[in-house]
Image 1 (cartoon, rainbow, N blue to C red):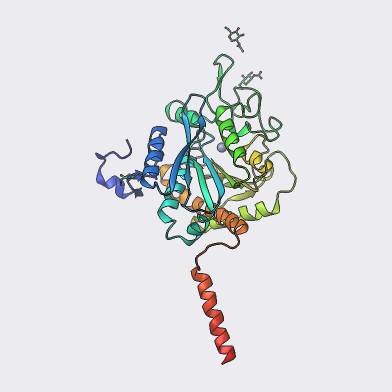
Image 2: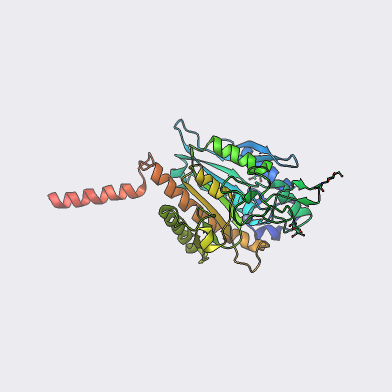
Length: 350
Ligand SMILES: *[C@@H]1O[C@H](CO)[C@@H](O)[C@H](O)[C@H]1NC(C)=O
Ligand SMILES: *[C@@H]1O[C@H](CO)[C@@H](O)[C@H](O)[C@H]1NC(C)=O
Ligand SMILES: *[C@@H]1O[C@H](CO)[C@@H](O)[C@H](O)[C@H]1NC(C)=O
Ligand SMILES: [Zn+2]
């Protein structure tokens, strides 16, 4: 059920309603599956739905590809949400992001520019089994749901299961631990599905974004060393944090995990950068601990709005770096400049 028709009218007045789907609530997995189908059907010229793999409990993992029809070869921005089950604001953001892009790509010059060069691949819920478990059994569940030791302990931390200095720091080999990294990299079907896909497209992926909560951080590679970070990644993340703060004043810290969070290994962010994807960032969304993983629904909209600004700042930077020629159309600012120059020129010669 997507929208309960019997709800009092008043309720929907207080919420952002877009095409019937309520983006300012957390949705159970069944509704997110249904949302994916609908968003694809409703925007079939721009959106296609693809299968990435199956979860441990045999549920399909779908991603959405947002692509403006064009003959020219394009590059890819990847974004995944919900690698950690309890971080509900993360899948909510992926859904918001897709909605915003589809609503605004015609009118927003920034979005329409980068969609000429870039396709957006969005995996709304990476850890589907865990997400379901966090709705039905244990709200604070983090890992996937693979059983170990005869079902006496469950779950691999998918964000410790990638092949980036796997198992070396900030991870555990005890399957009861919340940061159990598995017995080998990509042991979990979910991390394996993502890794296989990213590897197969790595020469086309310019940017890997992975959305978590909480902490209000933008993390850059690497999590397993204290070496000074890549200057350009740092600068882009700072620009993104500034754009984000411009909306509601929310303060984000930017840096490598060892300086703003804690060291870790086996993360998807580090792995993506190690295999050659130039831009790779982890977002830790609101808040800083007041509500933690239980971020109230009235913060979904402001969180998504401000995060949208940060994410589009990053995509815009990547677009302009790799496609400096940019848009085919004359933009209004370049038109303005031309006009200015011709006025100055006319004045000089007259
Ligand atoms: C798709 O379009 C239908 C008909 O306009 C609408 O009821 C539905 O809410 C839309 N779904 C999404 C996810 O936008
Ligand atoms: C799992 O169960 C089997 C059969 O009962 C037993 O032989 C084995 O030692 C158990 N393994 C662990 C890790 O508990
Ligand atoms: C694994 O962690 C659990 C829970 O913290 C603990 O009870 C158990 O003793 C640990 N096992 C080992 C082998 O360290
Ligand atoms: Zn997380």
